[in-house]
Image (spheres, rainbow, N blue to C red):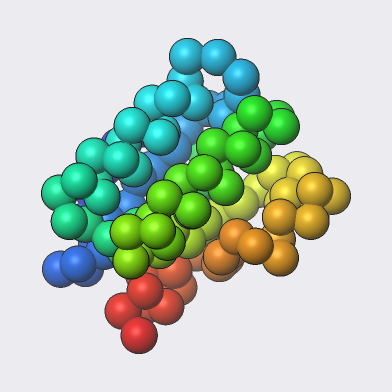
Length: 114
């Protein structure tokens, strides 16, 4: 999995993900990236999942864990640009009820501003 960090608003960071979010070495990289942002005091985070074709149960756990860590530190993680397959996986697991999901990065950033 490839991760690229971008700042789209003065206080909103975007992590662009590319590749499958599955059990293995890649998943801890996302957790570490979110931990680093939170450690820097960056608390408004968008995970751009436009280039993520597949998420397994381990990947779902990572997404929930990142959202919980952000919330515990007074921040928020929003997911953006989910593909149909990834969105269906999240819905089947009923995680769409606990994860903040938006169609686009711009919409996620806007919601984090308000």
